[in-house]
Image 1 (cartoon, rainbow, N blue to C red):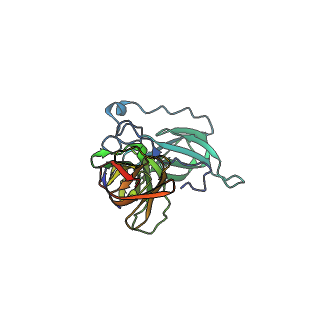
Image 2 (image 1 turned 90 degrees about the vertical axis):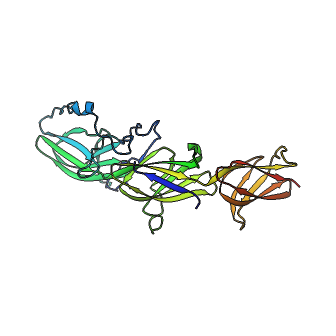
Image 3 (image 1 turned 30 degrees about the vertical axis):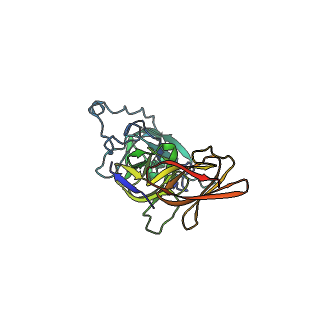
Amino acid sequence: MPGRVLAQAGNSSSLFSASPSLGAFPPAPAPGRGGDGFGSSGVLAPPTHGQMLMPPPPTPMVPAGQVALALSAKFGTEAAPITGGLTWRVYGAKPQPDGNFPLIREDKSAAPTLVLPAGPYIVHVGFGLANAVKPITLRGATVREEFDLPAGGLRMEGKVGDARIPAAQISFDVFKGSQFEPSDRRPIAEHIASGGVVVVPEGTYYIVSNYGDANSVVRSDIRVQAGKLTDVVVNHRAAIITLKLVNEKGGEALANTAWSVLTPGGDVIKESIGAFPRVVLAEGEYRAIARNEGNVFEREFKVVTGVDGDVEVLAK
């Protein structure tokens, strides 16, 4: 399909009754400042000097018969800590009659310390679409558990030439694996807005970018690295075309017109009804067919990347 992608490094288990995070952070006002756990360089930001000087949070009082569980997560062995966007869930180790494990505690802190009765538990941590599970037995005074979550982020936007596509006109679907390999073709994340961040396990993914609702679609494989935010810029070769049925060139558009946009081979790309519908079309040649009051009119036209404009069909 027309277009290109520039990338810069920058399933809920049946064990659990609660749903995991969807994995999509909303668009941030400025890169790296949206609470997504990543710095402006595209790598998880290390603690600032001021943060490193701050003492760790005090250990809570632990009553007799209970144990403090200190939790933390990293992007992998020898990797940086994850400082935001985590959801911790602690489940009882014994399933209920319905087969679900009871949720005991939930916390969204980066490194919480939970005080729980001594005994066995199952701890689940989610970071976007990445997650990890450990069985843990609490005994003694304090139990410290560190989870490895080799995950990274995708932040996507679209352009036509050097012009950024408005967020309302473009969306992204993310699939696991390569587009060239047989795999489950259900998206793991759908309709992601431009500028949003999707957190996924480290690995290969492919992105489907839809500009408008016609045929401007770009697909590309992307490699996500643990601890890094990969900025993906999808360049669409397309333009916005406004269709008009007129009695004379430059005349007023006729209302109640039914439109079909076809390829030279006769494939229908888009159908709509209106005086002047707007459609995003990939670069190429097309034929517009207008139907009004029982009459049919048509015209061939060409779409050039970045050249938005009107296509007038004469009612003659």
